[in-house]
Amino acid sequence: MVSIAGALVINIGTLSTPWIDAMLQAGRKACAAGIPIVMDPVGCGATAFRTTTALQLIREIQPAVIRGNASEIRALNSANSSTKGVDSLHTPDQVFEDAHQLSVRTGCLVSVSGPIDLVVAGDRVARIHNGHPLMTRVTGMGCTASAVTGAFMAIEADAFAAAVHAMVTMGVAGELAAEKASGPGSFQMHFLDVLHGLREADVQQLARFTCS
Image 1: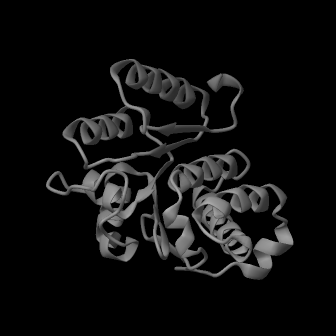
Image 2: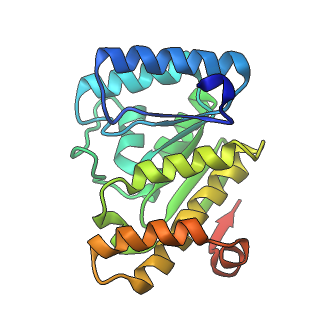
């Protein structure tokens, strides 16, 4: 399956020894084939097992992008940090130094989701201001962001541009879905519909981000 993919997204949400073996095997195949990898360290910091596994994956398969919430990124950069399950206890700006250090140390781009999304690739930094508070009320939005990042990585050689465009697209879709939703349940439905029908003109009109 990896050999015919444009990008590989590894999500450690479901974690067991057979899954880890499969992740490593898929990651090594992608590395050998030059296929970009996006890694989502779901729940990293909640347990030592998750943190150790995430660090092993980063070390052995060298993902192009690490995409997680602020607390997951801090946990990857600091062994003393912890998370509350898959929920973030921090904001992206609070962990900017962690994201920068992690990017420099690993050579990976780091994409951090939150009220203002943060994308860091060494000294290149972007902040994405799109999005809506309802996005935090729906399970799986972070995993969706990682999948969308993988989709952009499959067609865009510049990982920084791909990650920024992916998070802008997620945020714009969230804003448009929120206009139609009456709560988290209907928001999830509208988000999928909006993402499916989103046009380039919509993104260009509504995109709000800065790069430096």
